[in-house]
Length: 114
Image (cartoon, rainbow, N blue to C red; front, top):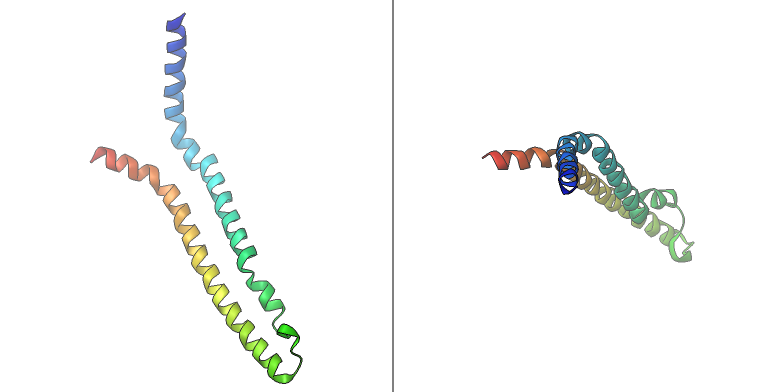
């Protein structure tokens, strides 16, 4: 009986080892891509450059005189620029994370053979 259990476990191990690279680049890559998409969505919700851009002409702190409006517009323009740059940097970081996901098995196999 133990031989059958050991045989079944060994067969499952071999099938998992064969299936792993296929999963890594299909289902696993899809999950990693969805994860990266959610990271970008969260950054967009946190930084909200579109929200700042939509409210660019709304006076800040209720300052309705021309100096307050002018200062609000310049302040919001700077905020949009900085937040857009931060969003672009985060997009590059997430793209690098996904690229590392794709390259990692190849790197591991290379390091095992060297």
